[in-house]
Amino acid sequence: AQTVTQSQPEMSVQEAETVTLSCTYDTSENNYYLFWYKQPPSRQMILVIRQEAYKQQNATENRFSVNFQKAAKSFSLKISDSQLGDTAMYFCAFMNRGGADGLTFGKGTHLIIQP
Amino acid sequence: DAGVTQSPTHLIKTRGQQVTLRCSPKSGHDTVSWYQQALGQGPQFIFQYYEEEERQRGNFPDRFSGHQFPNYSSELNVNALLLGDSALYLCASSLALLATDTQYFGPGTRLTVL
Image 1: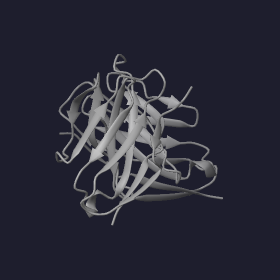
Image 2: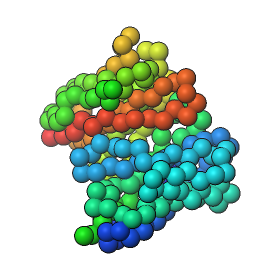
Image 3: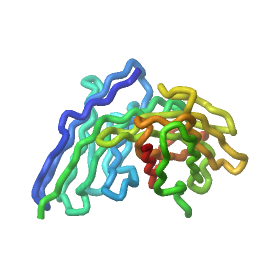
C-alpha cells in the first residue's frame, strides 16, 4: 500500500514571499502520478498541479512548481509570489497508473499567507 | 461546462439511521470515486464506480455501498450510521480512457451523526 507524508502541519509566510511545502511518499510501483490539491475554507478540493512519474521534467503551472525527486520519493510544491488567496489546506496525493484504487492523500499542510 | 455537483450540502442524522448522498460527474466523465474526509485529515478512498460497477474499494466496511446510474451519476449509501461516520464526503469524477485519470472534486456533503 502507498503512503503519503506531509511533515508540516502548518506554515505561515508574508504575501509575495516564496514558500515550499514538503511531501514524501512510499510505493513499490514504478508508474504513478502525484498531485497537489488545494482545499480552501469553502471545502472544494481544487487541483493545483500534477506530475507523471515517468517524466523527469518538473511540472509548472504559473506560480506553482514542483521539485520531483523520484529516487528520494519526494514531491515538494513551491509557490512563488504568494497571494492572500493561496491561504488554504494543501494536500499531496498519489495515484497508481489507471487510478482504479483512487488517490492516497497526506494529512495536509495548512498554509497561511499574511498580508 | 458543468463541474462535479453533490447533494445535499449538509445532512444531520442520528445513530443507526441510513443516509444516501448523490453526485453528478463533470460533463464528459464516466468514472466516479467517493472519499471520506474526517475533520483535520486528508480524504480517504471509499470506492470507485465505472460502467455501473464497483471497480475498487478502500478499507471501508460493507455498511458503505454505492451505485452508478447509466447517466454516470452516483449514490453513496451508508447504513447503520455510527458517530464516527461524521465527516465530509467528497465525490470526484474522471475519464477512464485517459491514462492520467486526473480526478476533479465536488464541493462535498457534510454529514453529522448525532
